[in-house]
Length: 171
Image 1 (cartoon, rainbow, N blue to C red):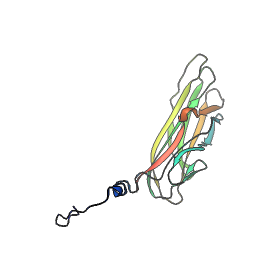
Image 2: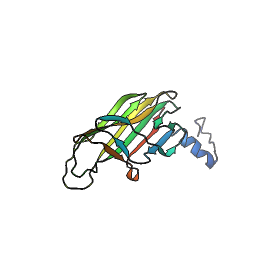
Image 3: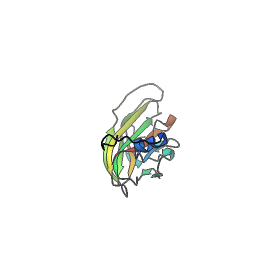
Image 4: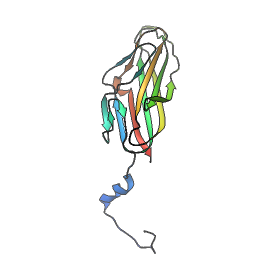
């Protein structure tokens, strides 16, 4: 019914997706590291998520997402720290979302302690809604390693647990 006196309209079933999905949640991307990423102690570094799982509109390149469609985007990231140094002396890691080269949001991981000679992993997870202008705004994932033992730590690429992704949630 188009509201004009009860007139019924028809459409082919093949057109339903056009009406339901018009602009839904794209552009979107998901990327992962192509190997472990070593981060030096007290070092802030841009994460290189070089392996794309998907990039619907070709807006993800050089570990940076630059959507060409204005709107609000949900941007998420996850990093698994692989301390791999026996007793865990890892104290604090932070995962950041940068917009246009500046930090806009961060997540802190709580310290964990352990003993014994086995692998211990800590993780960072971040989710933030970001308003993007659709022409020049971009987002990147950055990280800092603040190790209690002053050693480098690896961001683990194992099974894609470390990732960076985003999608449009509103215009």
